[in-house]
Amino acid sequence: MLPNAVVAREWSQVPFNRDADLTATHANVVQAAERVNRGDLSSAEAVLTAQTVTLNAMFANLAYQATATKNADLFERYLRLAFKAQSQYRATCETLALLKNPPVFTRQANIASQQVVNNGTVVTASRAGNSENAQNKLLEAHAERLDGGAAGGAGGRDTALATVGALNRPANGRG
Image (cartoon, rainbow, N blue to C red):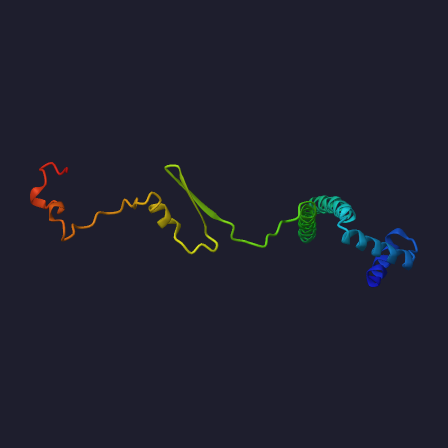
């Protein structure tokens, strides 16, 4: 963390014209890291909020400078810088939103299940680790098959239940 303290001290000296103490700067960096390790992100949130205000001001100023110039090259440069500031503003806002509302990660991705209600009978089948076919359980829920599929041809044992042939059908096509 000492290199970060050195860089922070160097960048702090020029704009504020003060001679920052390296030991104090290092202590501030260490304290900030300890706060983050404890889950206190208030300092990061404050910095990001201040940066959004600054980036929005930069965007507005650069966009205004673009409209104030008559030179096409300067106009384009100002607008490019303005849109870069706008993009950084958006990214900073997204980062701030992630700090305030972190995403939730789960260990098990497959949590879907099926539930079918049929005449008061509830058949529940989870897709994860279920080797039996839930549809077959539903079809045989009342000890009989509830399959409404196409009728098959008559078997050879019960000829009285043979299918009606084309000659025995009524004329109107019903039956």
